[in-house]
Image (cartoon, rainbow, N blue to C red; front, side, top):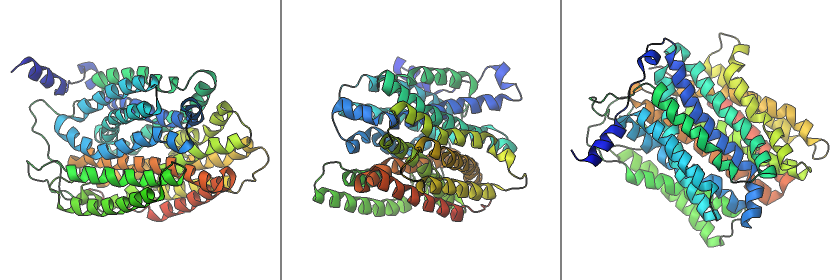
Length: 484
């Protein structure tokens, strides 16, 4: 074995935790805390980026529709890679891939802060998304398989709270950095957190694959393992990436990105054709990236839809709020502090909100109640008068909407992960995160479209009304699942 092979083997061999940590009866909470670092880092970046759009527009001399690709490029790569990286993690080990994700994310963040042009920044964000996918494809699986069954909902709630904390700090911190420092610090700030994640993962995460263990094949259908030797579904990956990219490019063109009409029509056609091709390909592939057998497991499909809706409801106000508050005359820093109320309420409700609900409530009841609260809060935002004191008027409905989403998403994730077989946990967790990323991408693109078509006030109100209707759909979709 040569030196390169030896180094590769060392890097791909997961190390066990120190005995003192592994033997502690509460050690699983240390692993949950490590996963929370990755959840916090990813959502901090998402929350911060929306607040520096105006600064990026000024610095690069471009429009809103072009600058939003700083977020959309990240999300597109994330969506495309979550499922295949989930499969890779089953073979290599979730701990190994998760720790490597911190390294890629941190290095790409440092490079993004030095970007000299918008194209370079977008490219760095795409590389950053590779690291984000390596973390997110394993986060839910590491939590769901690393804690006792009775603690799963609480652990997923803590993870959601870490995401909410990152989102809560993001807008305020992004606004302050853009106003008093530089947009570059929005990316540089990720470096120390990524380093802490590498160290925590190395010492606190349990080994997910022993050195002498054979690769665990992923199932082709619901619970039946597929034969070894199946080829990776490259065609499915390309079709998924093509359909999502074409759709978001078409939405960006409608939002002001300078593309000719024939190009927009071609993008919409490509979206439909790639989508139909993806459905056909996933039914035929030996190792489908979307695992139709898992999607068809009772309760999984509506659960994934609710996850997409939840993050659509969460991110639309984060992008739309600063635009509306800027119209009311608030500075970037103050607008960021107001918008912080939504993810802050999300974090609190995800951690402790369940304790305020009746103990006998099922996860389905929590989902429905949370979705109804979120819809009521967003409806309240939409019905506010255009004039007056928007900062104070927005506070209560933002808190209600964030609290509802904090109840909805952890309970929904617990429902989905209980319905997915244990041997498919990484792939299932990747699909949950894929749905979340698609919701985030739509939540980034739709506010820009609404503002472009109808102006900040009228367009923003129309988007908020549509979100309230989508929240009502989540109430209907939440349903019991058959536990494995």
